[in-house]
Image 1 (tube, protein in one colour):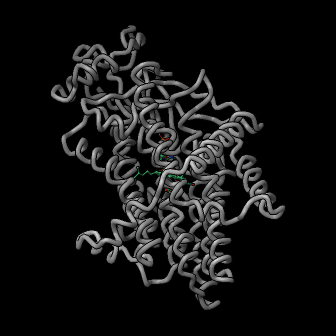
Image 2 (tube, rainbow, N blue to C red; image 1 turned 180 degrees about the vertical axis):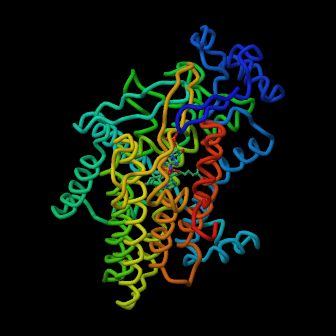
Image 3 (tube, rainbow, N blue to C red; image 1 turned 120 degrees about the vertical axis):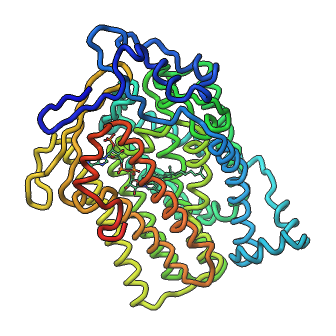
Length: 496
Ligand SMILES: NC(=O)C1=CN([C@@H]2O[C@H](COP(=O)(O)OP(=O)(O)OC[C@H]3O[C@@H](n4cnc5c(N)ncnc54)[C@H](OP(=O)(O)O)[C@@H]3O)[C@@H](O)[C@H]2O)C=CC1
Ligand SMILES: CC(C)=CCC[C@@H](C)[C@H]1CC[C@H]2C3=CC=C4C[C@@H](O)CC[C@]4(C)[C@H]3CC[C@]12C
């Protein structure tokens, strides 16, 4: 069945009498992987589907509900190996002068030093208490600070999420950073305290990350917030990793995903940098220009995130990913430990950049950031003004696409195809990558370890190009191909 409405073409591939409920449609997609357990959870009453005249078929966009053996093994691999990688990097930094190769060889050759290093991080109750206090302090700021109302995206089930004044991240970041600096100036706190307690804090963050991931998993099964946005596959491992609930909440408004994803880890990012700068000063007697530039670039990225927090509600993490290990453990452990590797490395092994090199790195980094922000801004302003805006001085060119939610609701969406979005379909990733490589360039070329962030971002964002397009292709059906034909380049025009 195909019908055309202005610019928009809606294509339905299955007619209503073939599958009269969404669940029949899901089962038909993959009968083998559609387990009993998944059926129980995915079998939510969505009465509008059965009403006469409802749009069929319900489009199953959003998190994957089909798990393959590879996806299960991958999930088990990440859940078990990512924490080991975090510890391995810490050992390489602290015990092997930042050399991943020497660390690896040392373990392989059963060198005593490697095993001593492995058992050196001890659980310290005071570190854990401090970590829990930090977590609760951020939760308090998130809950009580005033801020503008956030505008959530329509979920696959058709919920318009209310985000009451939780987009107060900038005030939370400012208060936390000013408080930390003030306490250090007043000599109440040692500014290097985070760096000095790093291994204990890392252990504590891991404990919290796993606790929260398990909480998310069990909450989804026993007391979910929005039943019709639950996504289950036949694999426990995949569900634990990717998350089952879309927007788990305390009551109707306190959003776990938004808080965990956007607060304890990202607010800590700049504090960790400052603490490692202080540690460099205390141990080496000076502050290198490289660590300052790395921190400035990080700070630009972090402040941008909080200033534009409302924009983040309409990105993949919040509008597509469910809340599981990936976002819970990732935001509490992976982000603060792996995204700050440059300053952790430079604090221990300082290097001074010549001023032309320092200026070039800073300049390229800021240019990357400007691209990143202006691409994201263009997408956002087009959506906010319903296409009634200027992009690069000309009226925005948009494609208007239809999509349906699982409750049978029919909606429209605008896809910008001029400005940056006319050059490539993910120009924002390009700006982000330029910024990431600049951050890592502050560490020189001696070791690969501090380049991990850029390498990770390259893999993550290339995979995201694919992941995002799969999602859009399902959400918009054949209309998406029209957009791809109009904007043929994925990332870098003329190359990819
Ligand atoms: N530092 C880090 O670790 C990471 C940073 N990032 C950054 O976070 C930001 C957000 O990333 P992400 O959510 O992946 O990507 P986007 O912000 O590009 O969001 C993707 C969504 O935008 C909508 N969209 C796609 N094309 C258009 C268009 N032409 N016009 C209007 N809307 C469109 C679609 O959603 P719909 O139509 O459903 O609204 C699509 O699913 C990026 O700038 C990225 O660089 C990302 C990953 C990791
Ligand atoms: C190995 C493992 C489980 C990794 C988890 C990765 C997550 C911690 C990151 C995945 C996507 C990341 C982010 C996306 C977009 C962002 C916008 C930007 O302006 C600030 C950073 C961030 C919020 C970033 C944060 C880490 C991730 C959630």
